[in-house]
Amino acid sequence: MEKLKNREFTPQEFRRARWKHAFSHFDMTPDDEIINGIENLFLQKGFSCINQDPSLIQLLMDLRNHYELGIVTNALYDPRQKVHQMGLSKVFPIETIFCSEELGLRKPDLELYHAPLKFFGIKPDETIFIGDSWIHDVAGAIDAGIDAIWINSRGAVPSTDHSPHAIVSDVKDIRDLLLK
Image (cartoon, rainbow, N blue to C red; front, side, top):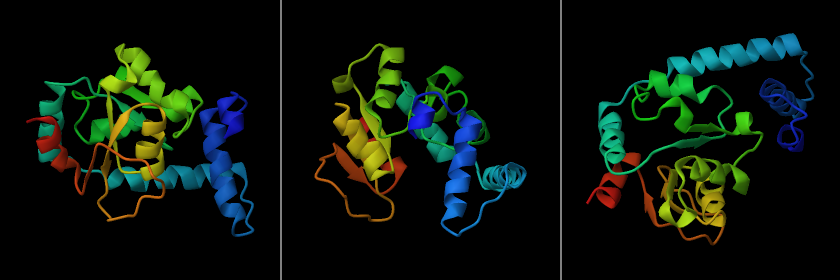
């Protein structure tokens, strides 16, 4: 992680290091060619599972009429591809997608939450962060001074004492919270 943040690793090298780290738990040391093949298969299979959800698209279009929207992601792939495949390119223009690897940061690094604030020219207390990871999307955002909504679809128990603005079981439940 520090090598990515210090720009000693490119995003590709970081992804490769993560795969190698995962395989090390099984006492396996695949070479870069095998890692690249696994990564390509992972991306191919992963993207084949992505579908458009018309009700999600409509919710985000409605939110965009009232708020400026952005994405902050630790994704191990190009999130722009996922946004496109989900039919959300009109909701999230390329410049509003903040990818941790490109910025050399990873959630819950506070600097990553501040990148979109700078882009949009807003303050933390004028922002709400919505996500499904307690540590990366709730605790990290709150530590950065940003309120959060936790999408807790699995009924998980919070691992810290942070207090989000709201907890919902489905992203579509935020309609009532933000579009009253």
